[in-house]
Amino acid sequence: MPAEPKKSLVGEEYEVEIGPVAHGGHCIARTSEGQVLFVRHTLPGERVVARVTEGEEGARFLRADAVRILEPSKDRIEAPCPYAGPGRCGGCDWQHAKPGAQRRLKGEVVAEQLKRLAGLTPEEAGWDGTVMPAEGDKLPAGQVPQWRTRVQYAVDPATGKAGLRRHRSHEVEPIEHCMIAAQGVSELGIERRDWTGMETVEAIAATGSQDRQVILTPRPGARLPLVELDKPVSVLRVDEKSGGVHRVHGRPFVRERADGRTHRVGGGGFWQVHPRAADTLVTAVMQGLLPRKGETALDLYCGVGLFAGALADRLGDKGAVLGIESGKRAVEDARHNLADFPRVRIEQGKVESVLPRTGITEADLIVLDPPRSGAGRDTVSHLSSLGARRIAYVACDPAALARDLAYFREHGYRVRTLRVFDLFPMTHHVECVAILEPAAKGL
Image 1: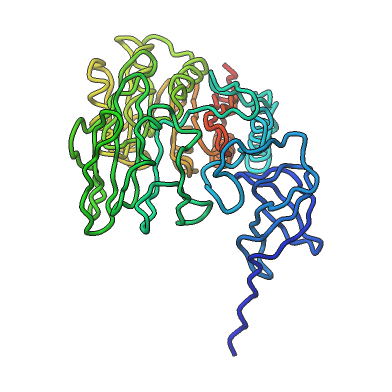
Image 2: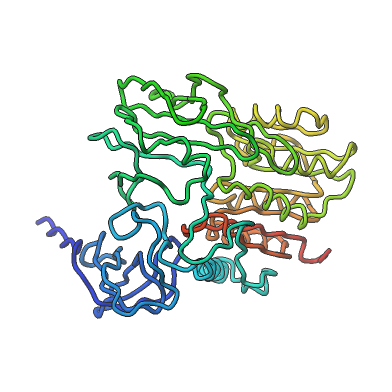
């Protein structure tokens, strides 16, 4: 006899005390029966009414929104964004928290992940526990920095209007303006146009140039609209069969500025979203590595060559850099961007496949900026065998970073310093730069 389906608890409400922050933009609470709740739109120490949004009887945990605040935290403010709140836009997690409180919460998450997954205290990681705001983001509570230079809008199929996804949903929240969008994105007026037939519309405003770009993803069989926006813009489209990005008109790339150089980024390829993020991260990496003339370096998951170029510039004519990147278009851009450095080589493919084939058995310096999932045990093992005097690990996910730091420790590397940057204000995301060195040398 088949088991009876478990009862859904969606819509049930619980009055709860809110506990610590957890990775992912929510806080932990428990019902009177001991059921774990991951609650959004709340802050540690508050007493709230939490309404379940996902989960069923007997589940390991439930997801919920704080729909009434009974005892607010001193760190709570009225959310500046009219689209923030339960059941609304899922792009921001902390609109209801003061800027300083947001950074404290992010620091607590990083510390918890380090302890749980790497067995490291902040002191052991060479970190003072602070999360640094990006330059220019020190704003009073209630003001929102306009930092997001790349915004992907979802299109409501019923109205053709652009909006943003609701949390953990494909439903579209229609908006008139995204408060965290950079000025160059807002100036395009995406929200004011009819995008009938499109699945998504991505708007890009390059840093350090006037390049603006829109990338359209049509629904099956839909025709592209005539794009007449409020500013000059290049238009690309995503092919529904291949997933490739093709030029409709204008340049197929944008020009981004960082570390005193211009970088070509084509086809909507990866570039840091905050306008000051690239320079911030290059500075942190170079200050941690202290490159010396004539050294050899690896730049893994190198994208369009941001760190490879910075390394090559500092290593001089006798230094050498090998970059590895899986994306074909990114490799083409990296080779273009670094063409004036004859001792830089860029290889295409996955790091775990390409690096062993290079025959490289040693390197002085290593930079790795892996995807959100991290580098993984096997790649860390290989990198540790190369004997680098310093390794810079750039991470957008503290959990993946902590796991990989534990693997590095197994292979004789310790964390010399860790710096944490709030390059994604109002969201739960942070960027970390860890500098590692051989534990036995302590150089």
